[in-house]
Image (cartoon, rainbow, N blue to C red):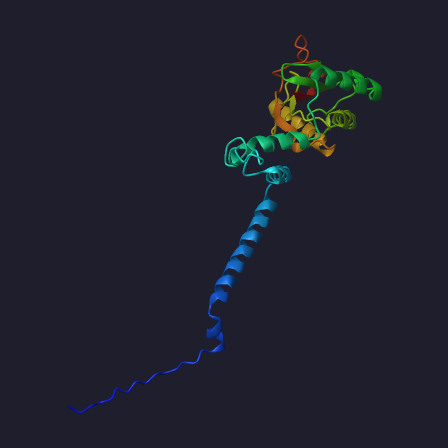
Length: 254
């Protein structure tokens, strides 16, 4: 047989500069971009939550540890209810309570302070403001008087005397946390025109008093209820047409 030698051809492929370094840099770059996206997403989420919650979270992570007792490392995990995320609700409530500067006042003390302010600053009109206690809380009633109305007949626009009284009330309740109910009342004298009756009139006057309170610095979130009662809750029941039945009641809830 004829001896045939095998011919082996080897091709040597030169690696280019890019191939020499490989594609690992692309993976690293992709990880970097992903991490940056996650970081900016975290910043956006933190900007969306309330300040007191951010403070509570900061306090939690500042003091959080994997173990309750680092010396013995025998405590429970931070995932335990006593030290973990499930306890954040109580932490947030505590932080929110600590940060809130306004505190609810004792009703008797508030009523006493209100009466003192009225006697001191409303000498001429103090017989138009009554302060008493109800089941709901401290009630301040601003009433009509002969020749000294808080609203003109058939109108829901407060007079200057009404504004002055409401301004004084606002100054004395502005720093309190109690929620507020505002009620409008009329006397039993029939009033009805094409647009409104005593029902509409009492509700409109209550809403006007609400606006005056807010104009004098009362936070609108404190207003719990604004309602008109017409002549269904008379102040002087023995005389349904007594002018003093036309009034605004401002109640600070307990």
